[in-house]
Length: 449
Image (cartoon, rainbow, N blue to C red; front, side, top):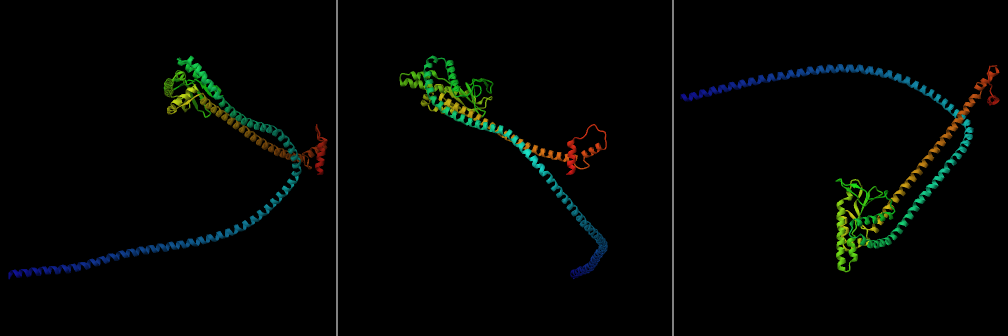
């Protein structure tokens, strides 16, 4: 019983507390709602006050703008009045300018007509004199010009005639080369016995044959080629190739003679084919040795020369050269691999002839260019002379015109200088000299005109 009563009491207490809480929450909510409405109302009132202030400012600005518009309208009216006055002045100025322009144009036309009438007769007379002078001067100028052009034509013709003769001569020399080779081969066989065993003498003989071929080529020594010039290689060692031939392009080609008389004599003198083949093999080996030795000198890399990238190895005995190539065609490849080209008297002479022809063509081209340049300079000088002559004619005409004007001012009219001097003489002025009768007559004629 006590326990149930206690529970009911606690329940009532909790219920009463809950009711009090609900009532308190209700009244608190209403109080907060009133406070929120009051705050919102205050904010709206502040905004309304700001809007009123902005409206008053805009009304003030509007009134100020209206005043400015009225002022601008007044200014525009004043400007319109000023523009109207300026338009009137411009029209008057244009009318005045047109009248002045018409007067100036009329005066110009009148002066132009008078000047043309005045100068027509004078120009006819002066033109006639200038034409006669020009014809005489042009004749003096054109005669040497004609002679020079004739000489130029003859020089060009001579150049091409010489070129044709040189070509024919080259063909003739190549034909004669075969005969020379046969003779040189026979001479070589006869010399073999005398030269056999002495390498120095053999070398000198090969250099002599090379020099002879160079002379036959028509090239000029110490101009297109040099014999045994000295050069220093990159290591400072002195090298002396047998010959250096200059090319038109500014480059050089080096020639070195190599002789193998000893083994070649054995080839020729062999009594059996076996002995001949054995000697021929030694002859080929000797040439290979010469190729390797020549390659080791590196003539094509000399810093003092702008040479081609290969060297000509000259074999003075043509029969020995041909026989070695027949026995071992690989000699050419071996030489090419070492930047060496094998040549004999006939092939070297043909090469040198081609180089000489190149030099001739170079000189002919240079001469033709110089002739053309001289002809062009002569033409330019002639044009300048004609222009100067025309200028002289113009100046003569202007000088004559100025002289006539000055002369008329001197004698024409009562106020002219001559007339005043005459009047002074007539008034009894003390003078030591008097005007000539011709001057007095000129004054009288001018007065009558």
